[in-house]
Amino acid sequence: MIDLPHTVRGYTLLNSDGSYTIIINARLSAETQIAVYEHEMAHIDNGDFSLSGEFADSVDELEYERHAG
Image (cartoon, rainbow, N blue to C red):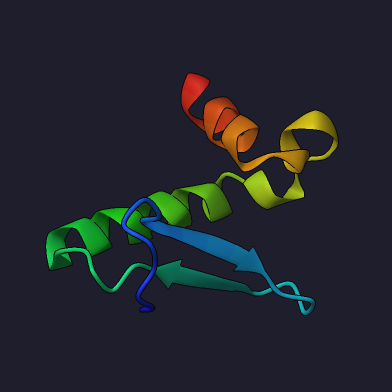
């Protein structure tokens, strides 16, 4: 949990050892923090961090690809 700008709910980092760190905005309600955690876990479970090419280059494109299908 970290205080992030209000426009950022959370994000996930892929660590050099292959593990992940999920960062969640501490300013959010507990309910929203859980929803953000579940959202980020869905990205991990879906293999979104192993995407290559155009979708791996942009967070907006990654989010679009993840939620379009």
